[in-house]
Amino acid sequence: MLTLFAQSKTMQEILDFLQDRGLQFALNLVLAILIFVIGKWVAGILTGVIERAIRRGKLDDTLSKFFANIAYILMLAFVILAALDRLGVSTTSLAAIIAAAGLAVGLALQSSLANFAAGVMLIAFRPIRVGHYVEVAGVAGTVEEIRMFHTILKSPDNIRIIVPNGEITTDKIKNYSANETRRIDLVIGCGYDDDLKAVKEFLMQLLQEDERILKDPAPVVAVDELGDNSVNFVVRPWVKRSDYFATKTELLEKIKLGMDERGFTLPYPQQDVHLYQESGEEKNETGLVH
Image (cartoon, rainbow, N blue to C red; front, side, top):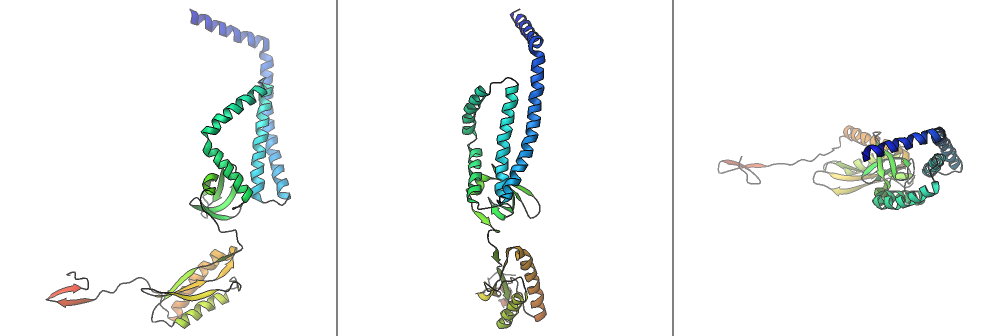
């Protein structure tokens, strides 16, 4: 009986509310929705304006996208508060609740806050920028965007990689685009019976004929090791960063074809086994019977 009485009382209160203030509440709800939808749309437009204005200030894409994301979040928070205020929710009380909840959430999401702090560090110290090819947190790719909590990379085979900012700042960063020039490091082997001077002259000639290879710093061709199967040269030309991969692959192809034409040997790992007869049994040098 008590339960039925409570239910009937609740239904009566709802009906009284709808009768007295239902129309006003419905109007406020529609206005709140309009405020949110239009406000979100305006926030998107203003974010684009802010991003373009930052770019016109000759700041790079890294800063423009980061600050635009922050501006959008702040404007969206303001729009949500305005919509709630239209519904009659006390924004002052709500702000206090959000502050208290924020403390609890902050303790629970320490890793996210660490990622945000790392994002600020990436923007402030700028070890990487949009458009740079980097290796961070064990992955490599071109930086597409640095956001508040994570950084977006695009791998050479067009895979989208999302890396938390905290993992970037706490690990080694290799930035292949930071400097204008790069050195190509090749190890080229030739046979012990080949003419070392002729091989060296051939390798140096290849480097001198390629216009992409810089004269300063000067390219280096030198004997680096007397290996088990070959005499190894180091071939170290310098090129512009944009020419690195194309020059490296074309040099390798030209070296292989040129050495074949000149009769030079490109050794590969091999092992000689000598057999001899002992007491009627065939043995190799390790003493194993065949």
